Amino acid sequence: MAHACKAGETRPTWQTEMTLDSFNNPVADHTPVLLQETLELLQCLPGGRYVDATIGLGGHAEAILGRIQPDGFLLGLDRDEESLAIAQARLAQYAGMFRLLHENFKNLPLVLNNTGIKPVDGILADLGISSFQLLSPERGFSFQSDSMLDMRMDKSQRLTAADLINSLAEAQLTQIIQRYGEERHARRIARAIVAARGKGAITRCSQLAELVRRAVPARRTPAIHPATRTFQALRIAVNQELDGLDEFIAGSVSFLRPGGRFVIISFHSLEDRIVKRAFRALAGQCVCDRPPDLCKCSRRPLARLVTHRAVRPGESEVELNPRSRSARLRCVERLDVSGHESRAPEAVAS
Image 1 (tube, rainbow, N blue to C red):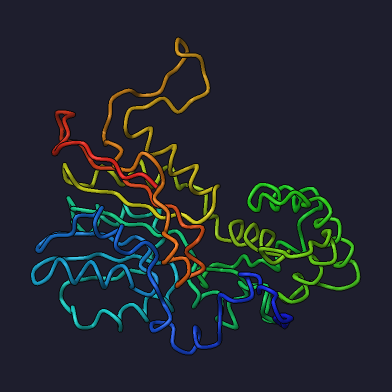
Image 2 (image 1 turned 30 degrees about the horizontal axis):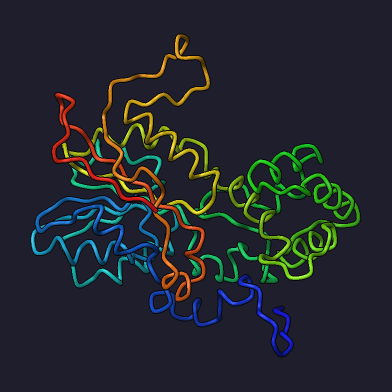
């Protein structure tokens, strides 16, 4: 339950971001992050072919389709069938211009091979989780709910957050919370989890959130809920969000036509580091820690960096959509087969 603020106090951002309306009307509440920046960098033109590899509720896809009509085409993937159903309804006005598939974005190279939709003019991957997913009572993503600890983006998979919490050894829990949540109190939280589950299984979000709150030192004015990092870590572990991300990037760029753009939006530093490293590798830059004479990185560029720094949302966007504050956007452009750029270099800095 959110705590009331006294007069003159500022409510922590984690208490202001979600309302029941977000679940009752997910499309009305859904605000695509960095929308204008995404459209500009993808250079959407009428007749173009684009991929939204994480279509979610269809916000970015709707805007892309609006620019590529009347004879453009968009392929959309998502591992969440509920989100796909909402996106299908949202995009109904563009019937015949898109196709949606229940697929993990990491399978995009295989999907493009099998469907024959290649080459494409642009690929977008928004790696964030939607407010709809956070607020869906049965999904178990939010530390603000009393739902079952689930956190599966694809409900057809078997492993849940409760499975991890109640079965992993303390050392394994510590590693997950520390690595994926970058939580400095990971050991203390893992110890508290193991002690608590000895008295009974931990099955609900509220149980875990309260347990974490008690385990970590209290802060006078927390910017985020004490359980935020732990819930992030478990969600990443359950859905294997970081596994294969670099392979997805390396494998998908070859399906872009020369001059086509690849845009990825990430929401935490772990994802962004992988994206940054993979994009630099595509640009023929060294990404290893070896001395120059021992470097084995390929120096044959397949793409050029369009954004040399991550693009971040402006103050006005963050004010309207607080969840956008952690978004980072990066973009590369596919080079032609001879290794030359298809247009004059440009850079977008944050």
